[in-house]
Amino acid sequence: MLGAMLARDPVRVKYAGAAVGWEESKNYRKTFFGRNANLNAGDYVVHQYFYVEPIVVGELDEGTVMDVSVHPPIVNKLVFQVDGWPGDVLVASFPCFLITEEAKFALQQAGFSGATFADVKITISDNFRDVYSDVKIPLLVWLKIEGEAGHSDFGIASDLRLVMSERILDVLDALGLPMASFKPFDDRSGHTDLGRE
Figure 1 (cartoon, rainbow, N blue to C red):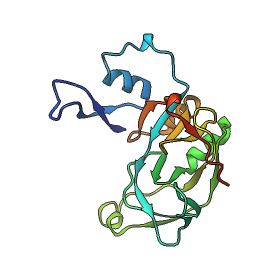
Figure 2 (figure 1 turned 90 degrees about the vertical axis):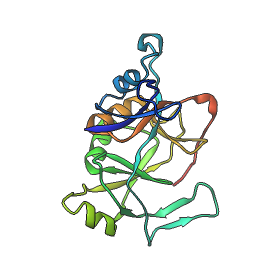
Figure 3 (figure 1 turned 180 degrees about the horizontal axis):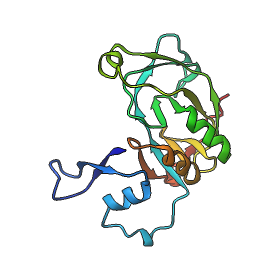
Figure 4 (figure 1 turned 135 degrees about the vertical axis):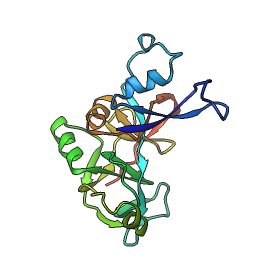
């Protein structure tokens, strides 16, 4: 699958600091070091945790129940409206994450910490009906993140970004995360345990 990557490629830079390119890969290590040629993979210890930024494919819809008196809001019931579907097995809309049922089963087989599964009601936007009428959305499951970033397989960093262990990222990446971006987790920036039920 094709995934969008940002790189500091001076030949292709139109705007200082970054260029947009496409790379066919399901191997985030290869993609990361391929796009950062100035880094020698052999000089780096393999990171155990990564920030993962899944693609946003929709938004919380009418019927979602959440407590907005706290930040991030605590969602108790999720209704999710899909606006597009690129095929990733992990997608998001703040503050929630969804995975395909296939990914759920793979995570259960691998064993994991820091997250639970819950039901989600899926709705389809008018835009999806118009533009993606021939695309079938797989069965989706709400992935509720409850772990501590840098300690559990799933966690939320203090800046509210998703953090995953490399082991679990490998499981999901093998199933397909072409539109997600990855960056080594910097434990020094702090982490938080949201302690959600």
